[in-house]
Image (cartoon, rainbow, N blue to C red; front, side, top):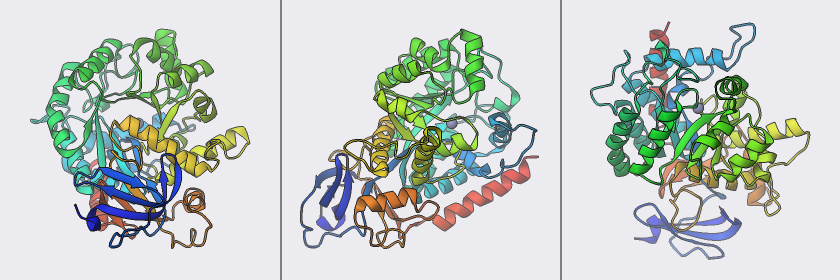
Amino acid sequence: MTAATHALHAADALLPSGWARDVLLEWNAQGRLTGVTPDTACPSGTPRAHGPLLPGLPNLHSHAFQRAFAGLTEYRGAAQDSFWSWRTLMYRFAGAITPQQLESVATGLYVEMLEAGYTSVCEFHYIHHDLGGAPYADDATLSQALLRAAARAGIGLTLLPVLYQAAGFGGLPPGDGQRRFIRSTGDMLRLLERLAPVCEAQGARLGLAPHSLRAVPPDSLREAVAGLHALDADAPVHIHIAEQTGEVEACLAWSGQRPVQWLLDHAPVDARWCLVHATHMTPDEYQRAARSGAVAGLCPTTEANLGDGLFDMQAWRAAGGRWGVGSDSHATVNAAEELLMLEYGQRLSTRQRNLIARADHPSVATAMTLEAVAGGAQASARAIAGLAPGQQADWVVLDAGDPLLQGLPTAEAMLSAHVFASHRRSAIAEVWVAGRPRVQAGRHALHAEALSGLATARRQLLSDTP
Ligand SMILES: [Zn+2]
Protein backbone atom coordinates (compact mmCIF):
# COMPACT_ATOMS: atom_id res chain seq x y z
CA MET A 1 0.00 0.00 0.00
CA THR A 2 1.49 3.33 -1.02
CA ALA A 3 0.39 6.78 0.11
CA ALA A 4 0.10 8.01 -3.46
CA THR A 5 -2.60 5.53 -4.47
CA HIS A 6 -4.39 4.82 -1.19
CA ALA A 7 -4.66 8.14 0.59
CA LEU A 8 -6.28 11.48 -0.06
CA HIS A 9 -6.29 14.67 2.00
CA ALA A 10 -9.36 16.91 2.15
CA ALA A 11 -9.43 20.41 3.63
CA ASP A 12 -13.14 19.79 4.38
CA ALA A 13 -15.04 16.51 4.59
CA LEU A 14 -18.55 15.61 5.73
CA LEU A 15 -18.11 12.76 8.23
CA PRO A 16 -21.06 10.95 9.86
CA SER A 17 -20.69 13.31 12.86
CA GLY A 18 -20.57 16.45 10.71
CA TRP A 19 -18.06 18.66 8.91
CA ALA A 20 -14.40 18.14 9.76
CA ARG A 21 -11.23 19.97 8.71
CA ASP A 22 -7.96 18.61 7.36
CA VAL A 23 -9.11 15.03 6.98
CA LEU A 24 -6.72 12.30 5.88
CA LEU A 25 -8.53 9.39 4.20
CA GLU A 26 -6.74 6.07 3.83
CA TRP A 27 -8.05 2.90 2.24
CA ASN A 28 -6.92 -0.60 1.36
CA ALA A 29 -6.68 -2.56 -1.86
CA GLN A 30 -10.27 -3.80 -1.40
CA GLY A 31 -11.51 -0.21 -1.51
CA ARG A 32 -12.44 -0.05 2.18
CA LEU A 33 -11.55 2.94 4.33
CA THR A 34 -8.92 2.06 6.94
CA GLY A 35 -8.45 5.53 8.38
CA VAL A 36 -10.44 8.78 8.46
CA THR A 37 -8.43 11.23 10.56
CA PRO A 38 -9.42 14.89 11.00
CA ASP A 39 -7.06 17.70 12.01
CA THR A 40 -4.12 16.10 10.27
CA ALA A 41 -1.64 17.90 8.05
CA CYS A 42 -1.32 16.56 4.52
CA PRO A 43 1.60 14.09 4.45
CA SER A 44 4.04 14.95 1.70
CA GLY A 45 3.24 13.19 -1.56
CA THR A 46 -0.42 12.65 -0.67
CA PRO A 47 -2.88 14.07 -3.21
CA ARG A 48 -5.29 16.79 -2.06
CA ALA A 49 -9.00 16.96 -2.95
CA HIS A 50 -9.91 20.06 -4.96
CA GLY A 51 -13.05 20.82 -2.97
CA PRO A 52 -15.25 19.65 -0.08
CA LEU A 53 -15.69 15.89 0.20
CA LEU A 54 -19.18 14.42 0.66
CA PRO A 55 -20.11 10.81 1.32
CA GLY A 56 -21.40 9.12 -1.85
CA LEU A 57 -25.19 8.94 -1.89
CA PRO A 58 -26.79 5.53 -2.36
CA ASN A 59 -29.68 5.55 -4.84
CA LEU A 60 -32.08 3.18 -3.10
CA HIS A 61 -34.68 2.70 -5.81
CA SER A 62 -34.16 2.23 -9.55
CA HIS A 63 -35.92 0.58 -12.47
CA ALA A 64 -33.13 1.02 -15.01
CA PHE A 65 -35.14 0.34 -18.18
CA GLN A 66 -37.50 3.23 -17.38
CA ARG A 67 -34.72 5.72 -18.22
CA ALA A 68 -35.41 4.81 -21.87
CA PHE A 69 -38.75 6.65 -21.89
CA ALA A 70 -38.03 9.51 -19.51
CA GLY A 71 -39.57 12.65 -20.96
CA LEU A 72 -41.97 10.77 -23.25
CA THR A 73 -45.04 10.82 -21.01
CA GLU A 74 -45.26 14.56 -20.41
CA TYR A 75 -48.41 15.28 -22.44
CA ARG A 76 -52.07 14.89 -21.65
CA GLY A 77 -53.54 11.70 -23.11
CA ALA A 78 -56.83 11.47 -21.24
CA ALA A 79 -58.98 14.22 -19.77
CA GLN A 80 -57.49 13.42 -16.38
CA ASP A 81 -54.04 11.89 -16.47
CA SER A 82 -52.53 9.89 -13.62
CA PHE A 83 -50.02 7.22 -12.65
CA TRP A 84 -52.04 4.60 -14.49
CA SER A 85 -51.62 6.26 -17.92
CA TRP A 86 -47.85 6.47 -17.36
CA ARG A 87 -47.93 2.75 -16.63
CA THR A 88 -49.31 2.05 -20.13
CA LEU A 89 -46.12 3.36 -21.79
CA MET A 90 -44.00 1.62 -19.16
CA TYR A 91 -45.58 -1.72 -20.15
CA ARG A 92 -44.89 -1.04 -23.84
CA PHE A 93 -41.17 -0.62 -23.18
CA ALA A 94 -41.06 -3.46 -20.63
CA GLY A 95 -42.66 -5.75 -23.21
CA ALA A 96 -40.11 -4.95 -25.93
CA ILE A 97 -36.68 -4.45 -24.35
CA THR A 98 -33.97 -7.03 -25.21
CA PRO A 99 -31.09 -8.08 -22.94
CA GLN A 100 -28.63 -6.04 -25.05
CA GLN A 101 -30.88 -2.97 -24.93
CA LEU A 102 -31.35 -3.30 -21.17
CA GLU A 103 -27.59 -3.49 -20.71
CA SER A 104 -27.06 -0.40 -22.88
CA VAL A 105 -29.77 1.62 -21.12
CA ALA A 106 -28.51 0.58 -17.68
CA THR A 107 -24.87 1.32 -18.52
CA GLY A 108 -25.81 4.81 -19.73
CA LEU A 109 -28.02 5.37 -16.71
CA TYR A 110 -25.37 4.23 -14.21
CA VAL A 111 -22.83 6.57 -15.81
CA GLU A 112 -25.37 9.38 -15.45
CA MET A 113 -25.94 8.40 -11.81
CA LEU A 114 -22.24 8.53 -10.99
CA GLU A 115 -21.90 11.95 -12.63
CA ALA A 116 -24.91 13.06 -10.58
CA GLY A 117 -23.41 12.08 -7.22
CA TYR A 118 -24.76 8.57 -6.65
CA THR A 119 -22.12 5.95 -5.85
CA SER A 120 -24.40 2.91 -5.60
CA VAL A 121 -27.84 1.78 -6.68
CA CYS A 122 -30.55 -0.64 -5.56
CA GLU A 123 -31.97 -2.12 -8.74
CA PHE A 124 -35.62 -3.19 -8.31
CA HIS A 125 -35.54 -5.51 -11.26
CA TYR A 126 -38.77 -7.01 -12.53
CA ILE A 127 -38.32 -7.96 -16.20
CA HIS A 128 -37.15 -11.56 -16.11
CA HIS A 129 -38.43 -13.40 -19.21
CA ASP A 130 -38.06 -13.24 -22.98
CA LEU A 131 -40.31 -11.16 -25.24
CA GLY A 132 -42.91 -13.94 -25.35
CA GLY A 133 -42.96 -14.36 -21.57
CA ALA A 134 -41.01 -17.66 -21.43
CA PRO A 135 -37.93 -17.98 -19.20
CA TYR A 136 -34.60 -17.43 -20.99
CA ALA A 137 -32.41 -20.54 -21.34
CA ASP A 138 -30.40 -18.92 -18.54
CA ASP A 139 -33.05 -17.58 -16.19
CA ALA A 140 -30.58 -14.94 -14.92
CA THR A 141 -30.05 -13.38 -18.38
CA LEU A 142 -31.53 -9.95 -17.63
CA SER A 143 -30.12 -9.84 -14.09
CA GLN A 144 -26.70 -10.49 -15.58
CA ALA A 145 -27.19 -7.63 -18.05
CA LEU A 146 -27.67 -5.31 -15.05
CA LEU A 147 -24.68 -6.76 -13.19
CA ARG A 148 -22.48 -6.19 -16.25
CA ALA A 149 -23.77 -2.63 -16.64
CA ALA A 150 -22.98 -1.82 -13.00
CA ALA A 151 -19.52 -3.38 -13.26
CA ARG A 152 -18.73 -1.48 -16.43
CA ALA A 153 -19.88 1.88 -15.04
CA GLY A 154 -18.21 1.14 -11.70
CA ILE A 155 -21.26 1.79 -9.52
CA GLY A 156 -22.04 -0.27 -6.39
CA LEU A 157 -25.06 -2.54 -6.78
CA THR A 158 -27.76 -4.10 -4.63
CA LEU A 159 -29.70 -6.36 -6.99
CA LEU A 160 -33.32 -6.95 -6.01
CA PRO A 161 -35.06 -9.45 -8.30
CA VAL A 162 -38.77 -8.73 -8.17
CA LEU A 163 -41.46 -11.23 -7.28
CA TYR A 164 -44.58 -10.43 -9.29
CA GLN A 165 -47.50 -12.85 -9.48
CA ALA A 166 -50.85 -11.05 -9.73
CA ALA A 167 -52.49 -8.09 -11.45
CA GLY A 168 -54.28 -6.92 -8.31
CA PHE A 169 -55.27 -7.65 -4.74
CA GLY A 170 -56.81 -11.08 -4.16
CA GLY A 171 -54.53 -12.84 -6.67
CA LEU A 172 -56.08 -11.27 -9.78
CA PRO A 173 -54.61 -13.18 -12.80
CA PRO A 174 -51.76 -11.28 -14.49
CA GLY A 175 -52.41 -9.54 -17.80
CA ASP A 176 -50.43 -9.92 -21.04
CA GLY A 177 -48.45 -6.74 -20.26
CA GLN A 178 -47.06 -8.48 -17.18
CA ARG A 179 -45.96 -11.71 -18.94
CA ARG A 180 -42.25 -10.95 -18.62
CA PHE A 181 -42.49 -10.33 -14.84
CA ILE A 182 -44.37 -13.39 -13.59
CA ARG A 183 -42.66 -16.20 -11.71
CA SER A 184 -43.53 -18.70 -9.00
CA THR A 185 -42.03 -18.37 -5.54
CA GLY A 186 -39.98 -21.55 -6.13
CA ASP A 187 -38.58 -20.11 -9.38
CA MET A 188 -37.66 -16.93 -7.54
CA LEU A 189 -35.77 -18.79 -4.85
CA ARG A 190 -33.91 -20.79 -7.53
CA LEU A 191 -33.01 -17.52 -9.28
CA LEU A 192 -31.66 -16.12 -6.01
CA GLU A 193 -29.51 -19.22 -5.49
CA ARG A 194 -28.23 -18.91 -9.04
CA LEU A 195 -27.40 -15.20 -8.59
CA ALA A 196 -25.83 -15.35 -5.12
CA PRO A 197 -22.30 -16.39 -6.19
CA VAL A 198 -22.39 -14.07 -9.23
CA CYS A 199 -23.25 -11.09 -7.02
CA GLU A 200 -20.67 -12.04 -4.44
CA ALA A 201 -17.92 -12.26 -7.06
CA GLN A 202 -18.71 -8.68 -8.11
CA GLY A 203 -19.12 -7.24 -4.60
CA ALA A 204 -22.82 -6.70 -5.30
CA ARG A 205 -25.48 -7.40 -2.67
CA LEU A 206 -28.44 -9.63 -3.44
CA GLY A 207 -31.89 -9.13 -1.94
CA LEU A 208 -35.50 -9.54 -2.93
CA ALA A 209 -38.29 -7.20 -3.91
CA PRO A 210 -41.83 -8.46 -3.52
CA HIS A 211 -43.27 -5.94 -6.02
CA SER A 212 -46.25 -4.76 -3.95
CA LEU A 213 -49.15 -6.18 -1.98
CA ARG A 214 -51.27 -6.04 -5.12
CA ALA A 215 -48.76 -8.17 -7.08
CA VAL A 216 -47.78 -10.70 -4.39
CA PRO A 217 -50.40 -12.77 -2.52
CA PRO A 218 -49.87 -13.27 1.25
CA ASP A 219 -48.63 -16.89 1.09
CA SER A 220 -46.07 -16.04 -1.58
CA LEU A 221 -44.87 -13.04 0.38
CA ARG A 222 -44.30 -15.15 3.47
CA GLU A 223 -42.56 -18.02 1.63
CA ALA A 224 -40.36 -15.76 -0.50
CA VAL A 225 -39.12 -13.65 2.42
CA ALA A 226 -38.48 -16.78 4.54
CA GLY A 227 -36.64 -18.39 1.60
CA LEU A 228 -34.49 -15.30 1.09
CA HIS A 229 -33.53 -15.14 4.75
CA ALA A 230 -32.73 -18.86 4.82
CA LEU A 231 -30.23 -18.10 2.05
CA ASP A 232 -28.89 -14.91 3.68
CA ALA A 233 -30.23 -13.81 7.06
CA ASP A 234 -29.31 -10.13 6.52
CA ALA A 235 -30.49 -9.75 2.93
CA PRO A 236 -32.58 -6.66 2.16
CA VAL A 237 -36.28 -6.76 1.26
CA HIS A 238 -37.78 -3.86 -0.70
CA ILE A 239 -41.48 -3.42 -1.48
CA HIS A 240 -43.55 -0.70 -3.20
CA ILE A 241 -46.21 0.35 -0.72
CA ALA A 242 -49.04 2.90 -0.52
CA GLU A 243 -47.80 4.92 -3.50
CA GLN A 244 -51.24 5.89 -4.81
CA THR A 245 -54.56 6.46 -3.10
CA GLY A 246 -56.13 4.01 -5.61
CA GLU A 247 -53.89 1.29 -4.19
CA VAL A 248 -54.91 2.19 -0.60
CA GLU A 249 -58.60 1.96 -1.53
CA ALA A 250 -58.15 -1.39 -3.31
CA CYS A 251 -56.26 -2.78 -0.30
CA LEU A 252 -59.01 -1.62 2.06
CA ALA A 253 -61.64 -3.27 -0.15
CA TRP A 254 -59.62 -6.51 -0.22
CA SER A 255 -58.54 -6.79 3.43
CA GLY A 256 -60.25 -4.06 5.44
CA GLN A 257 -56.77 -2.67 6.14
CA ARG A 258 -54.55 -0.02 4.56
CA PRO A 259 -51.39 -1.34 2.82
CA VAL A 260 -48.83 -0.30 5.46
CA GLN A 261 -51.14 -1.44 8.26
CA TRP A 262 -51.63 -4.81 6.55
CA LEU A 263 -47.90 -5.26 5.92
CA LEU A 264 -46.92 -4.46 9.52
CA ASP A 265 -49.52 -6.93 10.80
CA HIS A 266 -48.67 -9.77 8.40
CA ALA A 267 -44.96 -9.56 7.52
CA PRO A 268 -41.77 -9.56 9.67
CA VAL A 269 -40.94 -5.94 8.82
CA ASP A 270 -37.69 -4.81 10.45
CA ALA A 271 -34.45 -2.98 9.68
CA ARG A 272 -33.84 -5.25 6.66
CA TRP A 273 -36.88 -3.79 4.92
CA CYS A 274 -37.24 -0.75 2.68
CA LEU A 275 -40.77 0.60 2.27
CA VAL A 276 -40.63 2.28 -1.13
CA HIS A 277 -42.79 5.45 -1.32
CA ALA A 278 -45.06 4.79 1.73
CA THR A 279 -46.69 8.03 0.61
CA HIS A 280 -50.14 7.47 2.06
CA MET A 281 -49.98 6.62 5.76
CA THR A 282 -52.07 7.56 8.77
CA PRO A 283 -50.39 9.04 11.88
CA ASP A 284 -50.51 5.57 13.44
CA GLU A 285 -48.88 4.01 10.37
CA TYR A 286 -46.08 6.62 10.49
CA GLN A 287 -45.43 5.70 14.12
CA ARG A 288 -45.53 1.94 13.66
CA ALA A 289 -43.56 1.85 10.40
CA ALA A 290 -40.83 4.10 11.86
CA ARG A 291 -40.60 1.93 14.98
CA SER A 292 -40.12 -1.21 12.84
CA GLY A 293 -36.66 0.09 11.87
CA ALA A 294 -37.49 -0.10 8.14
CA VAL A 295 -36.18 2.59 5.80
CA ALA A 296 -38.63 4.78 3.90
CA GLY A 297 -37.52 4.75 0.25
CA LEU A 298 -38.51 8.21 -0.98
CA CYS A 299 -38.40 9.08 -4.67
CA PRO A 300 -39.32 12.79 -4.68
CA THR A 301 -38.95 13.62 -8.38
CA THR A 302 -40.74 10.47 -9.54
CA GLU A 303 -43.49 10.89 -6.94
CA ALA A 304 -43.93 14.48 -8.17
CA ASN A 305 -43.79 13.39 -11.82
CA LEU A 306 -46.46 10.74 -11.30
CA GLY A 307 -48.65 12.90 -9.09
CA ASP A 308 -48.46 10.42 -6.19
CA GLY A 309 -48.76 12.80 -3.24
CA LEU A 310 -46.45 13.96 -0.46
CA PHE A 311 -44.77 11.96 2.28
CA ASP A 312 -44.88 13.65 5.70
CA MET A 313 -41.22 13.99 6.68
CA GLN A 314 -42.01 15.69 9.97
CA ALA A 315 -44.23 12.85 11.16
CA TRP A 316 -41.66 10.29 10.00
CA ARG A 317 -38.59 11.96 11.50
CA ALA A 318 -40.39 12.81 14.75
CA ALA A 319 -41.06 9.07 15.11
CA GLY A 320 -37.36 8.33 14.53
CA GLY A 321 -37.92 7.05 10.98
CA ARG A 322 -34.97 6.38 8.70
CA TRP A 323 -35.06 7.34 5.03
CA GLY A 324 -33.13 7.52 1.80
CA VAL A 325 -33.77 8.64 -1.76
CA GLY A 326 -34.13 6.91 -5.10
CA SER A 327 -34.53 8.14 -8.66
CA ASP A 328 -37.03 5.32 -9.39
CA SER A 329 -38.40 6.07 -12.90
CA HIS A 330 -35.42 8.35 -13.66
CA ALA A 331 -37.54 11.25 -14.84
CA THR A 332 -34.47 13.09 -13.54
CA VAL A 333 -31.16 11.64 -12.44
CA ASN A 334 -29.60 14.00 -9.90
CA ALA A 335 -28.93 13.24 -6.23
CA ALA A 336 -29.00 16.92 -5.20
CA GLU A 337 -32.29 17.47 -7.00
CA GLU A 338 -33.98 14.64 -5.07
CA LEU A 339 -32.97 16.33 -1.81
CA LEU A 340 -34.14 19.72 -3.08
CA MET A 341 -37.51 18.33 -4.18
CA LEU A 342 -37.99 16.51 -0.89
CA GLU A 343 -37.41 19.64 1.21
CA TYR A 344 -39.45 21.84 -1.15
CA GLY A 345 -42.44 19.47 -1.01
CA GLN A 346 -42.43 19.80 2.77
CA ARG A 347 -42.12 23.62 2.54
CA LEU A 348 -45.06 23.84 0.14
CA SER A 349 -47.29 21.64 2.26
CA THR A 350 -46.45 23.25 5.63
CA ARG A 351 -45.73 26.86 4.55
CA GLN A 352 -42.54 26.76 6.59
CA ARG A 353 -38.84 26.65 5.66
CA ASN A 354 -35.78 24.56 6.53
CA LEU A 355 -37.74 21.56 7.74
CA ILE A 356 -35.34 18.63 7.24
CA ALA A 357 -32.71 20.03 9.60
CA ARG A 358 -31.62 18.97 13.08
CA ALA A 359 -30.48 20.65 16.27
CA ASP A 360 -26.94 19.35 15.67
CA HIS A 361 -27.06 20.11 11.91
CA PRO A 362 -29.15 23.23 11.28
CA SER A 363 -28.00 23.26 7.65
CA VAL A 364 -30.71 21.42 5.69
CA ALA A 365 -28.36 20.15 2.96
CA THR A 366 -25.93 18.77 5.56
CA ALA A 367 -28.66 17.09 7.64
CA MET A 368 -30.34 15.64 4.55
CA THR A 369 -27.10 14.30 3.08
CA LEU A 370 -26.14 12.55 6.31
CA GLU A 371 -29.58 11.03 6.87
CA ALA A 372 -30.00 9.95 3.22
CA VAL A 373 -26.56 8.29 3.24
CA ALA A 374 -27.29 6.41 6.48
CA GLY A 375 -30.76 5.28 5.38
CA GLY A 376 -29.57 4.50 1.85
CA ALA A 377 -26.73 2.35 3.18
CA GLN A 378 -29.12 0.44 5.45
CA ALA A 379 -31.52 -0.20 2.57
CA SER A 380 -28.62 -1.25 0.32
CA ALA A 381 -27.29 -3.63 3.00
CA ARG A 382 -23.77 -2.66 1.99
CA ALA A 383 -20.91 -1.00 3.90
CA ILE A 384 -21.51 2.40 2.30
CA ALA A 385 -22.59 4.44 5.34
CA GLY A 386 -20.25 7.38 4.77
CA LEU A 387 -16.70 8.45 5.49
CA ALA A 388 -15.75 6.17 8.36
CA PRO A 389 -13.28 3.27 8.79
CA GLY A 390 -14.73 -0.04 7.60
CA GLN A 391 -17.01 1.63 5.06
CA GLN A 392 -16.34 1.54 1.34
CA ALA A 393 -14.22 4.41 0.02
CA ASP A 394 -17.10 6.14 -1.81
CA TRP A 395 -17.25 9.92 -2.04
CA VAL A 396 -18.06 12.97 -4.10
CA VAL A 397 -15.72 15.95 -4.43
CA LEU A 398 -17.49 19.25 -5.00
CA ASP A 399 -15.88 21.66 -7.44
CA ALA A 400 -14.72 24.55 -5.25
CA GLY A 401 -13.89 26.41 -8.47
CA ASP A 402 -17.47 26.25 -9.78
CA PRO A 403 -18.81 29.82 -10.16
CA LEU A 404 -21.70 29.05 -7.77
CA LEU A 405 -19.41 27.75 -5.05
CA GLN A 406 -16.36 29.96 -5.50
CA GLY A 407 -15.54 32.15 -2.52
CA LEU A 408 -18.32 30.84 -0.29
CA PRO A 409 -17.20 31.04 3.35
CA THR A 410 -17.54 27.37 4.36
CA ALA A 411 -17.78 23.87 2.91
CA GLU A 412 -21.25 23.69 4.44
CA ALA A 413 -22.31 26.74 2.43
CA MET A 414 -20.89 25.09 -0.69
CA LEU A 415 -22.99 21.97 -0.08
CA SER A 416 -26.07 24.17 0.41
CA ALA A 417 -25.33 25.92 -2.87
CA HIS A 418 -24.82 22.54 -4.56
CA VAL A 419 -28.24 21.31 -3.38
CA PHE A 420 -30.30 24.49 -3.50
CA ALA A 421 -28.61 26.72 -6.07
CA SER A 422 -26.80 24.62 -8.65
CA HIS A 423 -29.15 21.82 -9.61
CA ARG A 424 -29.11 20.99 -13.31
CA ARG A 425 -25.67 22.61 -13.33
CA SER A 426 -23.50 20.08 -11.66
CA ALA A 427 -20.98 21.40 -9.15
CA ILE A 428 -19.48 17.92 -8.85
CA ALA A 429 -15.81 17.58 -9.77
CA GLU A 430 -15.07 13.95 -8.90
CA VAL A 431 -16.86 10.80 -7.82
CA TRP A 432 -14.95 7.87 -6.28
CA VAL A 433 -16.27 4.36 -5.72
CA ALA A 434 -14.32 1.78 -3.70
CA GLY A 435 -11.28 4.03 -3.73
CA ARG A 436 -11.24 4.55 -7.49
CA PRO A 437 -12.07 7.78 -9.30
CA ARG A 438 -14.97 7.06 -11.68
CA VAL A 439 -15.82 10.67 -12.51
CA GLN A 440 -13.10 13.27 -13.03
CA ALA A 441 -13.56 16.91 -14.08
CA GLY A 442 -17.31 16.19 -13.93
CA ARG A 443 -17.18 13.43 -16.56
CA HIS A 444 -17.16 9.65 -16.44
CA ALA A 445 -14.56 8.04 -18.73
CA LEU A 446 -17.37 6.21 -20.57
CA HIS A 447 -19.66 9.25 -20.81
CA ALA A 448 -19.84 9.58 -24.61
CA GLU A 449 -19.92 5.87 -25.38
CA ALA A 450 -22.43 4.91 -22.67
CA LEU A 451 -24.83 7.77 -23.38
CA SER A 452 -24.78 7.10 -27.11
CA GLY A 453 -25.51 3.42 -26.32
CA LEU A 454 -28.51 4.50 -24.29
CA ALA A 455 -29.76 6.74 -27.11
CA THR A 456 -29.37 3.95 -29.67
CA ALA A 457 -31.32 1.49 -27.52
CA ARG A 458 -34.07 4.09 -27.04
CA ARG A 459 -34.25 4.73 -30.79
CA GLN A 460 -34.64 0.98 -31.41
CA LEU A 461 -37.32 0.65 -28.71
CA LEU A 462 -39.29 3.60 -30.08
CA SER A 463 -39.29 2.13 -33.58
CA ASP A 464 -40.14 -1.37 -32.27
CA THR A 465 -43.09 -0.33 -30.10
CA PRO A 466 -46.21 0.96 -31.85
ZN1 LIG B 1 -40.59 1.75 -8.23
